[in-house]
Length: 481
Ligand code: NAD
Image (cartoon, rainbow, N blue to C red):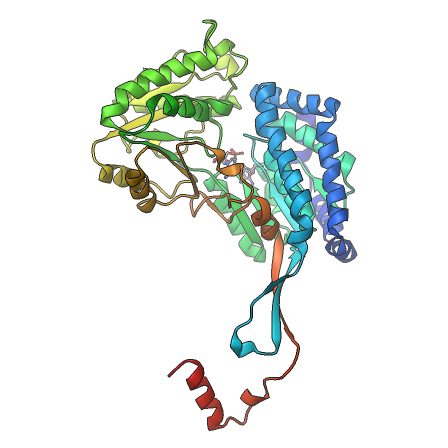
């Protein structure tokens, strides 16, 4: 694998140019554009059959175990099932999504009909991250194919075992003019980004998102940026503390906190802090240490992806502690294993490094508040989050928190499920992302919505020059001047 990655980092601009020109070839794109929903579904079905084949499923699970030590249960629930459910939703709806959508025409357009025609954008690029490396590559691919595009994929070089599996799958299922895949690091991505893609679908960090946006500007390519950020969870004085502690322990520790929509930090009503910390610790032990063998021996607890990120997270904890934060829940980390235990910090301030960047690890800073306005002040210290969660049994409080904040998405008395409903748009806002995906939103994202007007009877002769006062009077009537 090392050798393979080295080879890919060395990939020349000329090779990338030739891969791109195959995908971009005029007749190829026309054929994809003309393809029916049945033909597109047949391609997507190949993906489903591949991942549901027990042999391939095992290889995928093994790769994810090697990359992140994901358990089989997390592989099936967070990597495979979202793909299969996406595919089923596409089967059900693609024919309808592809139909021209007729829209009403105003009276001023008498004699004309109007409709939206969905065309593929053309040649699209998918750049994916390492945290859910399989599903965050395959789901955008499904929608790109559903919309009739030719696709180039560059998965993350960091989750290299999963990227290797993705490469095998793509090369087995697709011809080079349908879907191509290139492994490699930022230097390969930089070369790829020189090409004039019709659309770039990027999932990753806000820092790299800015690089993607600049590259897209060169060719005026459209883009979707699925980014991250610091997603707060608010716990008010009416929240059910036991279930809140369970939900946050799950959300914070799933994939060892390396989830874009994980709760990054908590803001809790002062009257509930002690009870929450007690329940949180109890839950962590119930989840990962019920046999008293230590969390590091739980088969269900993932590892940090690599040493670089392991050291980054520890340095955030150290900086917080050196500046007065208290580690109230924690145990020892293990360097050789990139293991960081669930950790809770109190006495945290927004000046600390841990509050200046997305944690992306199993560490929960906890802030306390006494009145609701303080919560809003805290949240407005940071850019708009990808997700904002509210744990409360007071409709008045929920309305107040919803109306005084903004976020890419929100869940009330639940965490992270916003991605599960394909009818809801998923994505951030400004720093946490640009553009929305999921279900029809993704189909539209990978399509050009062509607005079409068709004249059925009549004409516009009345408004052609030479102008008369009649025209002036007509427009005065229309706008009631
Ligand atoms: P990243 O931004 O470092 O990398 C993402 C992709 O960009 C990778 O394929 C990488 O090779 C490529 N890349 C890296 N540097 C580049 C450069 N200079 N030029 C061009 N391409 C470059 O992100 P990551 O570390 O893989 O993933 C973690 C981030 O992704 C977190 O911020 C997380 O919140 C976010 N994320 C968001 C979502 C979402 O749906 N909104 C989902 C998962 C992860």
